[in-house]
Amino acid sequence: MTRPITLAICIYLLSCSLLSAQEKDRTAQLKQLLKRFPAADTNNDGILTEAEVKAFRTRIQRGQANRNRKPKPTHEDLKYGRHERNVLDIYIAKSDTPTPLIVYIHGGGFVGGDKKSVSGRLIQSAHESGISVAAIHYRFVSEVPFPAPQKDAARAVQFLRANAKKWNLDTQRFAAYGGSAGAGLSLWLGFHDDLADPESDDPIQHQSTRLVAVGSRGGQTTYDPNVIKEWVGGRAHEHPSIFKCYDVESIDQLSDPKLQPLYDEVSAIKHLTSDDPPVYSIYNEADGPLPLNARPGQGIHHPVFAKKLTIEMDKLGIEHVYRHVSNFKGDRDLDMLDHFKKWFGMENSPGK
Image 1 (tube, helix red, strand yellow):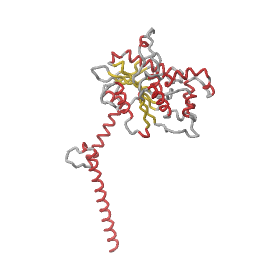
Image 2 (cartoon, one colour; image 1 turned 45 degrees about the vertical axis):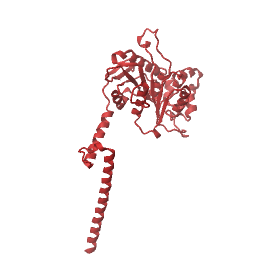
Image 3 (cartoon, helix red, strand yellow; image 1 turned 120 degrees about the vertical axis):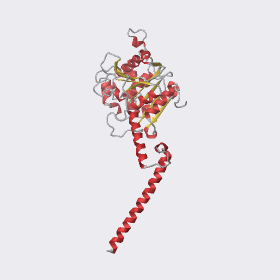
Image 4 (tube, one colour; image 1 turned 90 degrees about the vertical axis):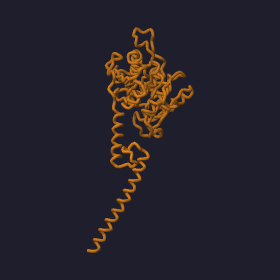
């Protein structure tokens, strides 16, 4: 009987020792947490308890949820053109003076996507800075090929400018951003010559399409399949949407020289001139050669699109802020918004 009792006592003492060590470790952790997050000490007694840590975590999570919650549009599904997808939403910031405007253009390979994918966090942060936000739909190439989406994006900007006084918008401070296809359209808008037509019978077309800033998330700076093949390699130029964009059925048809003028027209980089706006770009696709077994379309968000753009923008002395997620750990929405604020000439922005 003596041996089992002795063993039980040893096990008990060992567990107590381990528990004591764990408690000491946790006490040290709580002290470190208190240094990093003094607001968690709600009773200000200089000691952080487990209950206070749990309550602080809950407050942070609720705050994050509130930041991500999307406000209801001030005006929803406003018609800016004749097609059923020529609609937009606008989220107007409260301000005594006209506000800058950021236009969100959704991605989806020009065959899908929705304006409701606009970031609620970006809208709320923009509103806190006195910036309004719009989100647009545009025609899909599965129904009408290029350059229908480009024309729709331009008309949406013109429509917003035509109603600027009604919605308290500053027509001199318009920006656009999007992901993938929406980024390509934003870049195209930013670089293309002004499409205002003062002779048109349509007063909306009298308005300017020019922007003062552009944001690109994984955007394509060219939609020329031959250039994409050269820049990216693999089979990126065989993205399924590319055939619908140009209303062709085979890869061989994409080599038709008759398509070159259209390739040039819809490719943003072909329109770049010294009077064009600065660009904020962020990419998350791997920055390197494609694998030998790359599937059709793989690489269509490759960082090489941004790198080629940087070369051309540097030649013209235009600012291009390039980020890659592999070495950028900040908040993408807020980082882009801070640069937009800088380019809008607002305070509390990078370089101010």
